[in-house]
Image 1 (tube, one colour):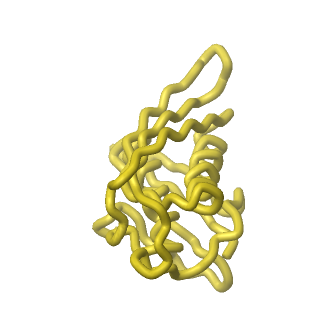
Image 2 (cartoon, rainbow, N blue to C red; image 1 turned 180 degrees about the vertical axis):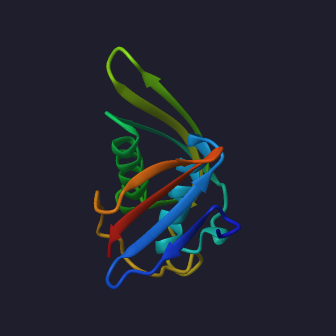
Length: 145
């Protein structure tokens, strides 16, 4: 596994990411970092501004999809590239849903400073899964380039 908590798996046409975490919050953080790093060099992003992101889902996979989609929208619509994440995930048993609240740090996109690599068109449900392995979690997801 990559020292950043994610790695890229072989795929013929799209980006295939595998992330891990000791808990769900760390897993979702590493998934977001893996997503951002597909488009930009995440190590070049400074923590100059903070944003709040909320996501929800009927299960963990649905929550991950919504989370990654919201991170991507921050980049594409608001032109903010993110590199730091502080996440809280809470289940609502009565509603059978999961809720995620995150504070994320980053800065306005600079295509030269952040070394723009490739455009992500969409997050997909194809190959998206979360597994509990030992004392931690592993997630895989595919993004359409």
